[in-house]
Image (cartoon, rainbow, N blue to C red; front, side, top):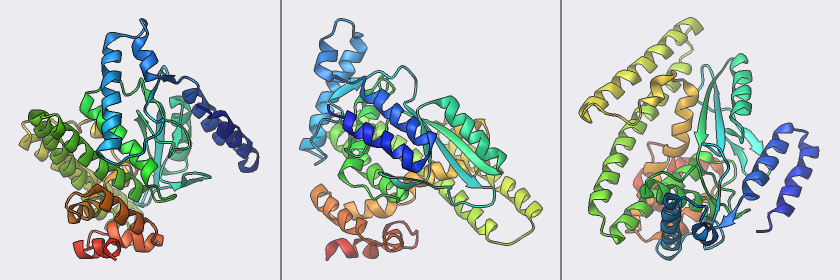
Length: 356
């Protein structure tokens, strides 16, 4: 699986970048890649628990579906398995100033500038987050079960993904493969929103192809709830942006900030009541919520409505959708953001570039 030369390049880059962090990520990546085994070999092993074998069998079918029906890359990704011996493969650190909705960004040779910094060790992530907090930033640390190396490596199925429902497994696989299909360095919102749209469409088609109407309805119900919750977070972020630009004294701004988050909690409680008293999103409020929490959702969701409109305009033709999105990806950053991420953008504006 020939990943050693790339890892050596990453290690060499530490000299020019001067950072222990790049060394940490290179070692972490090599640690994951070195544990890979072909899925058929894992399935055939008597040491593999039956539940793991069953899920990996399903993965092979999902992987073929991704290529055949979704037009996603046909390569070695998700055709191997790796047990990294921990509940998450990476912990992402999100940060923002106390009075800003704009994320702190970190820039890297391959991914460009992104709105989070990932660690293969939770203690290292927490330690770095504590440093940012001492500097006065709002911080959030979230565990990640999978990530994409954008086709630079053959990404494995991880033990962190095993134990989920097969719907969740299909969703994350379709999402991560989408990054290999289209990725704009430095534009996290565009990349994650594009992958989220492909993920949702892929899961719906995958469940429909199997005639699993009950599971499809459950998935749609969850997506509706997630969209409602994400909408609350994005609206809260918009209100905070207006507050932070208002120029009111800092003490008053701090008080209004807390009131805005209290309003979010109340709005979520009302949604929870509408859902029958249960919510998958209670964990968001367990340890307090801040600007950085909102960034972690906005990164994945803020461009989804406009990108979904592009797909809808093609009548569900994924090949045409990918063509249009590649065209939009080539725009200058501000023009691209205006096209698919501004809330006021019209459907006609969204599709204008791809139709030319």
